[in-house]
Image 1 (tube, rainbow, N blue to C red):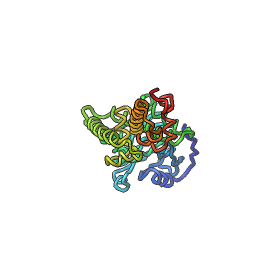
Image 2 (image 1 turned 60 degrees about the horizontal axis):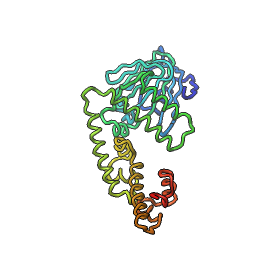
Image 3 (image 1 turned 120 degrees about the vertical axis):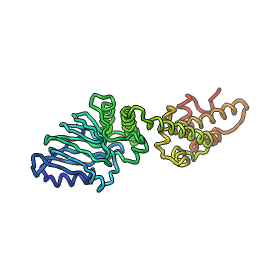
Length: 313
């Protein structure tokens, strides 16, 4: 269990209202025509991902075509089964979920969850539609799922557990979130139909973006105001698209930018020693794109094991 929930008896109408407030428009059917539900719903956020804890002993929760029309459906729901069993249905896919299993549900399409009146708990990650489409294109399809012994499910559960530790820094949370999306992308593309062009087209698009990003940094790296965000702005894409493009080359835009700046600095330091040029270290740092000499000195020593003035000696 990732969180201790305290379910309480409540009217079915109250549970449905709480569910709609957090997850969108859904219809709830109680157990054996009972008018009350043993349940609890709470909203949470971990590593920058909004998520809902949902516990209940209802019979069915469904999202009809009318619900979709009523509610635009801005999210995909990545649902982890924590307790009990649930029959999930979307896009002609039917999957009986057991604890540890997961499924991706598209809120823009009808779906149905059957719990047979037994107590069940899910953790539902709310993944913005624009982000999902931006990352995965047409590969983001509701109904994709993995059983608890699947490597994707094991890895995503481990990443999620880390998100719940509560001792991560802001930077660590960024990578936790990216790890979750990366694993989800691996699952989606593994389950894409044979012959699908979406993955190939996405790779070609990223390769072209990588080429443009490298060309931009090669040209402007010595400008200290250049950042990965500025690259994204110049190319008219999101920072995440730039990061994923550079991942094709096994690097990040930040690391590539630093690489270019240190290459320039090293060459200038070698020229300084060879030509006995009295140029100041600070001048070399600034000319290479660094606007903080202390940072330049620390990073240089960390990378090359010596002070800039001793390089090449």
